[in-house]
Image (cartoon, rainbow, N blue to C red; front, side, top):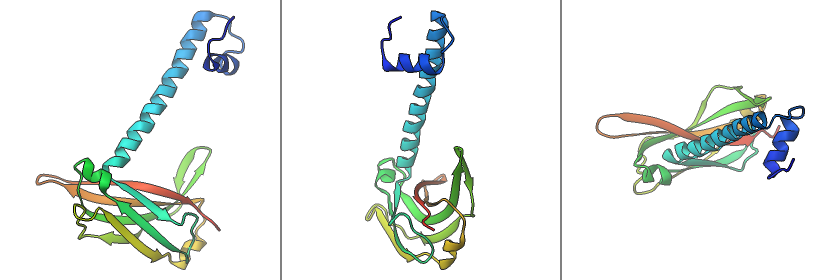
Length: 170
């Protein structure tokens, strides 16, 4: 039997160790390919969704309670998607991931808010702050900083957000 690609060989080694039926091998290979294609499409959709709401970045990453941090929200990609933010709120939430399952360990806490955002004139909103000391007492693997924006038109008010995740240091 000739293997035409590394993918064929991996499929045979991992999934089909006891199968000699060519049609079954092809069927399983196509199913595996379909799963990988769906995962790639989901990743692309996630990137598109994030671009609709702009981006958020926290620096330095690896912070804990008492640390000074800078959070920057950039509305440029949101504006390019015709989602001009009217306001932005910066929130933080503790998260853990165990065996691929994400759980929250804290509620959302608001860190900063701007109701007078003029994103067309200045698409960047920066908040420099010191996290309250109590954040050092939470048991969490990572902190997720989320920018929630409100945007809309004459008919509807819409809401969306994007995140940046940083590992906990204590």
